[in-house]
Image (cartoon, rainbow over all chains, first blue to last red; front, side, top):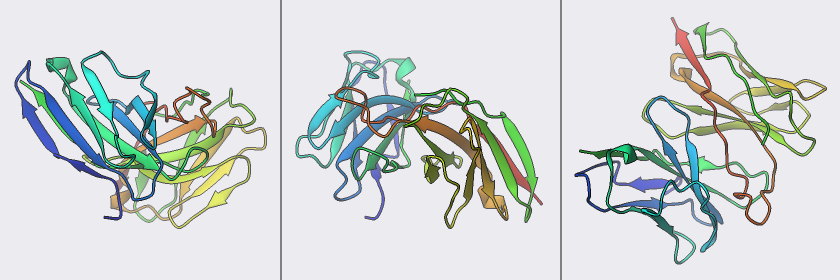
Length: 114
Length: 116
């Protein structure tokens, strides 16, 4: 497709379950970012990939959060043993390369932990 | 990245120009100004960016003051579909080895409401 695609759009899980969120970036985009957006707030950076290399994971809130991009294209954000505070919209963005190139966002996955 | 300050909300009549201000008084020489907007239940949408010259594209115009301490995003003929939260973001083009690859640091933005 032409844009960044994220799936699922909505995810409901019980506290303690593991979840996996998928991001399909724009074809050919080298850089890929994950952000977390709490209700009423701006997105906050979680992690960054350049191709398959995870160059920055400083924004991941705990070791329950794990992201991968094994072939430098599709990325998965995994949250283990989910907690209620993990409820948020998770946004993925990609850009052609590092530098001034703008990031293009998907519409996110809304995660609700019961 | 430099911090930005935006008014929390603004109203605009449909068909009129919407002028959204942003202060970034601590901006560094290599930092660009980016504007994104987020319509309800959608991801942020890139609008425009610039370094020091004014920029225009099919969506908007970006006016950056000569000292680069502030900028204005102009939507020339606002429509109801322009109702959104508008984010002004300042960032350097390269994040360094572990600098987050120029991650975006969002504030709370300006809620623009376009009304009939």
